[in-house]
Structures are given as structure tokens and as C-alpha cells.
Image (cartoon, rainbow, N blue to C red; front, top):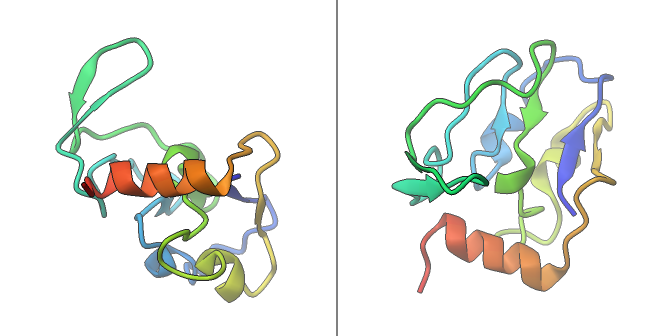
Length: 116
């Protein structure tokens, strides 16, 4: 499963630099698929191919957020999600809407970082 940031976030920013996939963004900030990954282009749900550096709309305007499709729970990098480990208010929690197996998370990591 992916990690999500709850509305209890105090916007301290401790989580953002810890993410190996650059899946965490400040509220109101655009995000990109390519940021922190090796993706040069991405085929989105409707089949359209977009550049990896194309800005995507923020998921939250109020507090830090995690792009679930980029979150691998730090699999292949660390033993535990680093955002949750450093969060001073414990608002980085499992996202019940995104359940993924360890194999799925590792496959996502390989895709994001274009590993052979």
C-alpha cells in the first residue's frame, strides 16, 4: 500500500527530503512523474503519453501530500517508510485506498527508476 499524509499535517516539511522517489510535495505545488525518477515520459490512464517533466495538478492545496502512484513505501531503499519515521505528528500513515504487495511495490520502484 502507499502512504498518505493526513490533515493533521503541520507542514513542517520533514518528510519531503526523505522520499527516494520524490513522491512528496508541499501543498499547492505541482508535481511531476520525472522528478526524482528516471521517467522521461509516462502513459496515463487514457492512453495519452505525457513528458515526465509535465506539471501535474496538486493533490492538496492545504498540506504536504504524497503521490500514491510514485510511493513505494521506500521498498528497495529502506526497511520502513522514511516519511513516517521522521514525521513528528505521525500523520504519514498507510493509505487504505492503495493496497499493494511487496512485489508490486518493487515493480513500481523498478519502473520509476527504469531499472532493467
